[in-house]
Length: 358
Image (tube, rainbow, N blue to C red; front, top):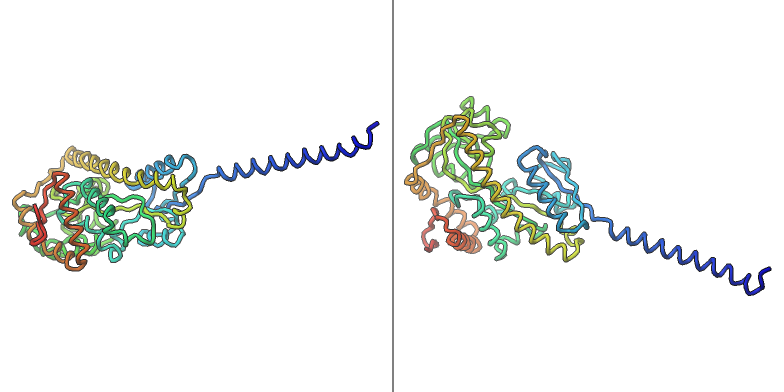
């Protein structure tokens, strides 16, 4: 038989055990909650099967790896969260947490950033990517992305001409009909050489070339291979006429602020390295796709270097207009561009009077 002291002690012990069990359960559940990853939504206005699909998946993989399991990114393909022109606003408003955004589609909001899409800016996308990264480091385009977090940005390879008219001299551009769906900088460029822009949606380009609605289409070797435009043009011309599209990977600012500071630091580094790595991958793809076209029996014309220099001089007003419109920041960007090109050992065709320096 239990003594009175023992009878009093027994419920105390049981209560203590129960209390400790509850504390343990709370601590364990709190730990599990703390380890639960932050889930982010990536808006992809394109399908997984497009050329941007691998870019998106690799970018997300690198961010997840850098977060050491603290962040999980779910990709919503084929415009599930919204169409192409709305990507910036989707991220800014929090409908999406991350997105691939082409500033070209909302060009009026990114006049300085679109510098790297100017005519004859560089021979490859790696150089233009380095130019843009230096623009960012100097804070020259920071204001254009103040409503979001810019995680990464890269320049695509330069664009070549896929034409049904032979292009061997500057005068050959006069009167040529071409697709006009690539922004205001290109529109002014076409006007300078006497070409006429024709409005077509993307799926109509192949038929437009085949039927003669347009004479030429400006794109990369990779896009030409994918769209099979080489089947309906007689003169694919290697010229590097325009800088490649600026591609940005942006994030909602509120969600960025919720990412631990140590992960933010890793993501900044990962974003910068990803841009350089993928710009080089795209250049390698360009060499591969050009080779594919040649293997299919396509003869690639090369625009003569002497005529390219003549054409560059004819296009100087495009650059000068951009400088005049954007003022002192544009001049700083131009000088930054010259410094990077010199460091990279790249030729500068667009030598603006009063601003160009050796």
